[in-house]
Image (tube, rainbow, N blue to C red):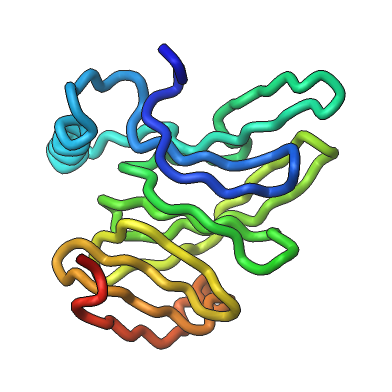
Length: 177
């Protein structure tokens, strides 16, 4: 296969040689379309609680151009469906990853260990009012595109306090098609 890990979903660029990638599914699913796979993953999760390694760290050697992708070091629990990823602030010391069926934004402290090595440590995270499609951090606000049960945009502010669960939430209906 072109990409042996599964279906590429979202990415967040750490620097010119390193990035994180979420997978919408791993290579154990063989649906004919992404929608078929999405339904199969959802049924598996709700029936059995199955989770998968769906967060990768990829690095590029600037001298040779060789690339290496591996499951993100330090992530000890799998994802139900990783969809949406972003960093907090310009220093990029915290990674936010949406876990769709869990209805949770999982947060990870990023510990840089050299030019092409990182280790993630999961922190408390943020429980969502619905399933989210994408996330976007701008300034001190975390914007979340909600899908189910209330299509709209949730705004969490300030994003820096999301881990402590102290935030204001505003669901804006009708902004998404």
